[in-house]
Amino acid sequence: MEDTFGSTCHGAGRVMSRKAAKKASKGRAIQRELEDKGILVRWTGRSTLAEEMPEAYKDISQVVEVVHGAGISKKVAKLRPIAVVKG
Image 1 (tube, rainbow, N blue to C red):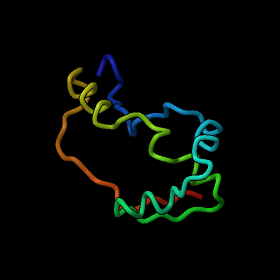
Image 2 (image 1 turned 90 degrees about the vertical axis):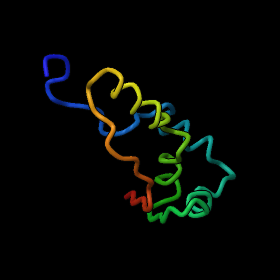
Image 3 (image 1 turned 30 degrees about the horizontal axis):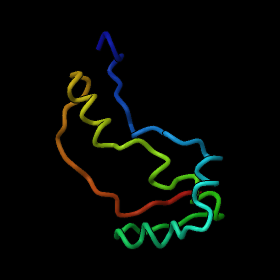
Image 4 (image 1 turned 90 degrees about the horizontal axis):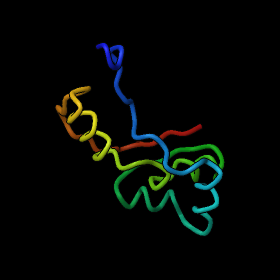
């Protein structure tokens, strides 16, 4: 509680800016890539989806290991995304 005020991460955090993600996604079918992994996708505008491509974020498993190891949070379950809604 003293170190974190009772808070922990609520996501992985970005490793790539939104602008860089848009640039990196050019020529890729992000929707199809996600749907091939079984993830349903809905969005407004191609650039909106591009800025949320998986590579734009840190590896969540590594983030979870850090907060678990630091005693900030405890691992209790591993979830797999089934849908992304971005608008």
